[in-house]
Amino acid sequence: MLLLVVAGISSCTKEIDLYPQSNLSTATFYRNTGEMNIALSGCYNGLQRVMTEEWTLTELRSDNVVMGNAASTSTVNRDLSDLDMFFPNTAHAGLYTYWINSYYNIRNINILLNSLEVNYNASSGSISYDPLSIAVAEQDRKKIAAQACFLRAHHYFNLVRLYGGVFLVHEPLNPADAKAINRSTVEDIYRLIIADLQSAAANGANQKFASIPAADVGRVNSWSAKALLAKVYLTLNRKADAIPLLQDVITNSGYSLQASYANVFSITTEMNSEILFAVRYKAGGLGIGSPFGNLFAPLNSGSAVVNGDGSGYCYPAVELSNQYVTADLRKAVNIATYGSGSSARLYAKKHINTQTVVRDGETDWPLLRYSDVLLMLAEAQGNTGNSVTLINQVRTRAGLPNATITNDAQFEAALALERKLEFAFENQRWFDMLRFNTTLTTIKAEQTLKDHFAVMYPLHYTNYPSPKLTLAEMQAKVTPEKMLLPIPQREIDNNTQIVIPQNPGY
Image (cartoon, rainbow, N blue to C red; front, side, top):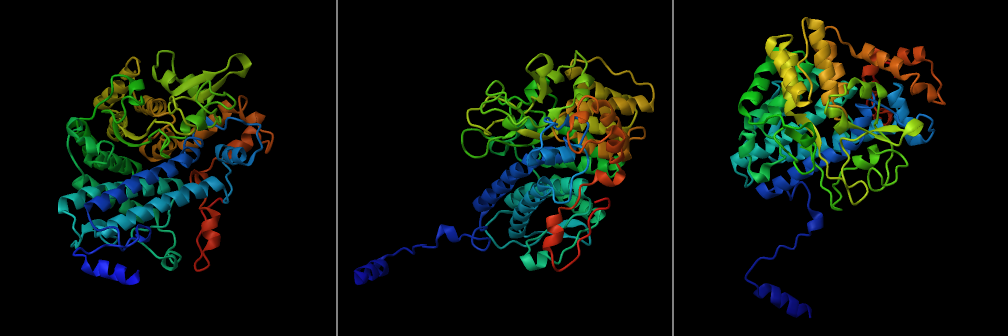
């Protein structure tokens, strides 16, 4: 039999590739455009694991949301309550889960960019395209790299705003080399973010919205890169740099406000003209559906709100609910009530749609919207007639009359409130409050949170069994240091080669 097999193989005129698919690695896979696009799809998919935790580090810590079940002492609810009340410990599980999932995807992105010979030069703060030896056309290389650079910038932008100076990893590393890298400065992290987004804006697809090919719907393009870069510049208080980028998107991108606020989030009109970029989900038992319908639906609601019951997370603060005036069409999209009388409970409705399988929803999570672009331009320009017009465009869509603004303080208050109501439960509010510390004069994050605790203490926080804090004790925990989360203690303890400093206050 052995002789027959040898004879059969030797008489074959074609070479048979018997390399096992299970042995594919970075050395054998990234060889052509098709494989690069498959790898890029994996990087997009990597956003989902991060999003599962992100609301806990952003929305929950803002004045939009409180921990729903204040009396619960379960580990999961206790961890969420600690974030809500501003004293997470350094070993908090959610902090590490978000952190490590972000770095998992950064690793995947770095491998892809390295395979495309796209490199970051830290000294010049720029992205370079070195000679390529694999079968990928230059146009395809730049299109794929632009998207990967955007995704890497997105992760680092969130990490630096949440944790401060983090580990700057922009190329594949082996474990030994990784342990030799300490935290970088905030300035160095932003240099990479800006370089990535400048490259993405320059090399990304730039068709107007109506002309985007079907195969590219939902992918990063030049317009989404410019919008995110503008937000980075605003965060750094570089308003003059943000303005032309935002004006370019408004004038030339073809994106626009949807006529209806509800339409923005409908599963029948996904990736509509208002969505510059979103984390996409697909229902149907594929393992890539949205979990947020079940996470955010009321606890013990059975299937009255969503199939499979809810966990009661992301509980809207009564304070937020009351800030929507009766005529505001956004409230019915964002907030709903389950039950009646004394048992009535608010819940975040925006991410809940009909689903067949538990934690398998269709609803995408928007990261950049056209209304965000309009309001960012207003923020960058300050109190001008054009800025007021931009705010009123958003208000008109919400069914509200034009804002009355006669001075800078009124302008800042109107802008901050409009963003709060427009982007409720989209993980924007926390980052907005941080940015307002530098871009606005009259609104500061620490005071906003102390005022939030004062409003919600008799309505909610007084019900916490342990620790039982007074209002003054809660407000005392809101300090400039606590605007940053702690570096996960696991990262510090597991590195035996260098000493990794913890953030002050932890």
